[in-house]
Length: 288
Image (cartoon, rainbow, N blue to C red):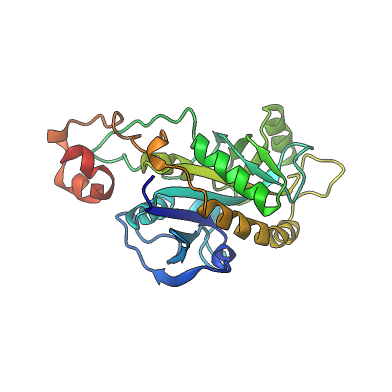
C-alpha cells in the first residue's frame, strides 16, 4: 500500500501523550460546520502521521449531546486522515465484559434524537450503506493492536448509543440488556455515520468502565468510578494506538473508501453553488 498513512484518533485528551511521538504541533481547523471540539494535535510516529482530536475538548467541557460531530469528522478529513479510530468509555451490558476490558464493537443501535447526523441535509441528498457500520479490516487490526498492548479484548458486539448526559434508568438498562447489546455509551453516533459519509475506514475501541445500573451486585455507575477505570486504562489505550499506527490496513480495501460513489442522488446540474462550496472537501471528485 501507499506509504501515506494518516491515522485520526478521537478520544480523551491524554491519548496524544505518546512516547516517541515526534514533531508535535497544534493545528486549528475551520470547517463549514464551525470549529471542531478543540485544536487537532498532529505528530509523527514512524511512517504514520497521527491526528488527535479531544472529543469533549481539553478539560472535558463539551457534553455528548453538544459535540459538533460534523465539524470533528470534517476537520480530520480535511487534514488528510486516511483511517479513523474512536476511543470511548462505555458501560458494560454483559457480565462477561468486565470493567477495565476493551470491546471492538461492530454494530450500533442509535437512540439519539436531536443530533446532526449527516453532511447531506440542505440542497443535496446522499444515502450511504450502513449495514456494516465499521470497517471489518480496521476493526481486526485494532483488536490485535489492543491485545499486543496487553488488554483483554472482546471482538465484536453491539453499542447502544443514548443522548445523555444522564445515565440510564434501571428500567432502561434492563431493556437494553434484553436486546442483547454489549455496551452502552453516548458518543458513537452520529460519529460512525459521519465517518462512513466521509469515506473513512472507521473502528471503535470501547473501554468498559462499569456495569451501567443493571448489575445488582455492583454499585450503579458514577463519574468517580468511570474516571478511576479510565485512568488505569489510559496507558493501555496509548500503547494500542502505537501498535495500530504500525499496522494500518490498506484503506483502498475498505468498503468506506468509495461509500459515496453510488450514494449521491441529487442531479449534478441541480447542485447549488453554496452546496458545492460547503462540501467541496467531500464530494469534489464525484461532481467535477
